[in-house]
Amino acid sequence: MKNKLFKRKPKRTSFLKMFLKGMIIPIIITMIVGNYTSFFVKMQVYTLLENQADNVVTSYMRSIRRQNEQKKYLPKYIFLSMLGSIAPNTEGGYLDPVTWVEPKCRSVTFTVDTNGDIVDSCREVMCMGIRMSEAPDSTEYYVFDPQEYDIPELRGLFEEHLRDIESRDHSNELDITSLYINEKEKKMIPHTINVKRYRWDNGFLNYGYFDFSSVLEKEYTITVDCDVEGYVLKEIASRHNMEEYPHGVAIQGIYGCDPGLVDEIYGEYRDRIKEWLDRNSSRAVFNDMFDFGKNTDVAFERIYDDEEERAIISFIETDMNGLRSWRRMIFFMSLLFGCMTLFVLVVCLTRNAKNKAQYAFEDYQRALTNNLAHDLKTPLAVIGGYAENLIEMRKEDGSEKELNYLGSIMKNVAYTDDIIAKTLKLSETEQIKKLNKTKVDIKELAESAADKYRTVLEERGIELDISGGGEVSADRDILGTAVENLVSNAVKYTRNDGTIKITADKKRLCVVNDTAENVDTKDLLMPFVKGDKARSDKNSHGLGLAIAAAAAAQNGFRLKIDCRDKRFTAMIVF
Image 1 (tube, rainbow, N blue to C red):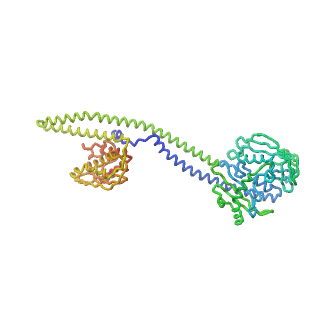
Image 2: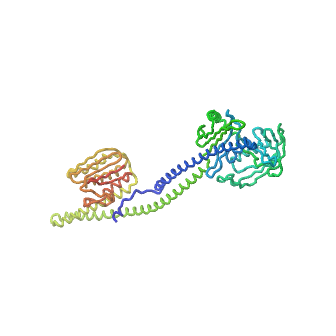
Image 3: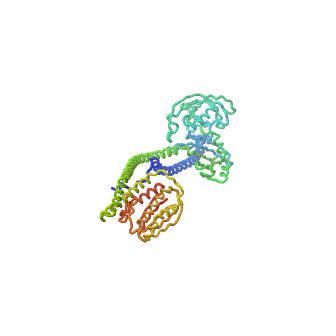
């Protein structure tokens, strides 16, 4: 019961300090998990980029082979623009939408000749397919290039297409029923365009899959009148009327990316592309050859067909910070961190409630001890005074037995008074809140404490050695209390003709003394614990080490004790 009552309590802590200390683990775990998660996300995106760049080249090569075999297939300049419009939320890019990646990138595809000059590209164009008869191979393809003819009636439609690529919330369906055709060059200028504009309520892409939940917002007709040499006006049936010939086919609309984007990327890397063409003769995929950066992949391949030799270049640059994968990762990391924070908060609130109850009990216990000590001092002083008067009165004619009794009373009064004084000293030391810290010379403090015991040391033949030196920042009076109690404890329990060694430096003060036998130090820092028979006499109260530990703790230091090979060690760690 005594051990439980007087067991030394740890230093008090506030809820804020406890919570901040508890948050260290959630922060470390979140950082570790986030680091590994981000690594896998990056690897996924890099792999995707490489695959997509390679797929562009593969798709184009397949188109060339089909065109050479069938002689009636999408022209290369139309195919490149359509290739760059599969995912309309990219700027002419080819990144397929997938669940974990929301593409937002710069992506262009173009072919160059052996001199490095652009032959075809994915620039924004209007494409048109016309089926002339029932024959499967009777479809003819035509293209309108807004850079060749700037027609005011169509300018808004092309600008709207580029905005739709960025916003992803609208798209247009075109149905051309009349057009000017240049049969020789397979070019056209639309004459009558029926436009249906759709709004995609859930976005064009829904977590990686095409979402066709569209609402017809408006429909209107655009008519273009022009007179360009080499072009002939031709009427055709609607793309929705497949029984009449000729009629429009499904491939009918605006495809490709901003022409300025193609020119920007091509102009930036033209010289290095030419260098690559001169140095390589086969397909290769490079991530960093042109210093594109970690978020970019470029695929090259030389093409040999019936017309010419050229190379296709697929450029894809992804904005990693704009990816859904990163947003999801942040969401999951926030969720993980939030759950751990909530757990820490609940634990800290529970501990804080227990601590408050414990602190209240400790305060009550300390107040009770102090009150008892103060209340005992007065009657104890009265008893001592009466005993001292009786000794004076009976000194001449009192019996030896009476004088022995009175002397015993005086000794016990002095012993009890000493216990009360040290109990109050322990309580006072534990309650000190404001410290007056200065630079304290440790060796000088130890020498000052030891000087009080020089006579006792000489009488008992105890050798004292003080060495070292150094200064620490501490309250001199409080630290002096700790040092004095350690020296006093060492003098009291060192065997006759033994040694006491005190060493001091900037990190510790160590007091080592010889003892008659090994001492159990398990509970020796508790108040009123004496440890062994030698410490159970009337000269010991079991409070010296407790006071020293409290005084050290008030300065932010720690007292450690140990006893091995009949050598007792008390060390204040600064």
